[in-house]
Image (cartoon, rainbow over all chains, first blue to last red; front, side, top):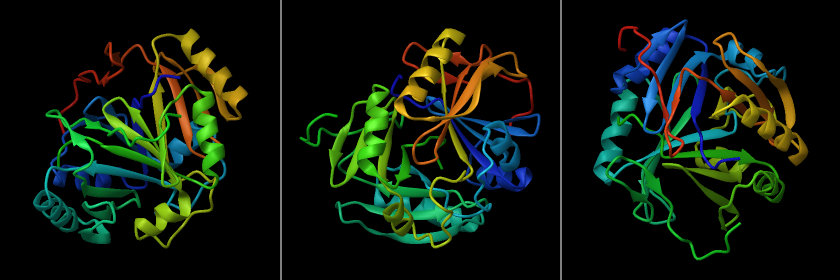
Length: 147
Length: 147
């Protein structure tokens, strides 16, 4: 298996609401067949009906919409000021602030917001992780054994 | 907000089991402080304790581990044969086949497997989406209105 992700699909219960939330934060995408497609760097972020996504994935064991489902997305930024600005913009766009931005144990600065469908985003400035010009994140060599 | 994802963190209940599953599929990463970091194209895929991830994200409303949590990851491949091979490898590595590979309504070919912690991956060949040499996915212009 190649070591990459092509698409992250977020299941939503109200597509116009979800689309409006991400658009309020500046995202621009394409809507087709009750699905919203955002180009997000080298992958796509898709918004689609949570029930259809579960059906399509062959999953019957569905957690209630809006609950913590075990996956968290993160966006790393270049400064603490950028973290504060994005957390504030997310709050204004209707996000729940699940963890206000603060210093982290690893010497960074981060907060977490949760979108209207319960999907959490950590917004972080982590000086230990490299952000390339195009926004790609490059992990450091932790000096640990590979694999 | 920039239109990109830096990190996808998968909450797991048994880190050695989760790490072994992805390693069996060929992924190679670094383990540090009970966390496994994989470089995955321009972002990182991280495996971490599901409970710690929920705590760290300020979430109390936790869905039961292993249930469908409303997010599905996808990896797009270059042919149907690659899809069949990866679905088979995932099954052998201990994945649940949630939807066997088959033709899709959009003219592609895809299946879904679910990892030991209930995180679903759609494995797809979609001739309508461009895969760059480096594995980046580029959405087509659907001819729909932007955002």
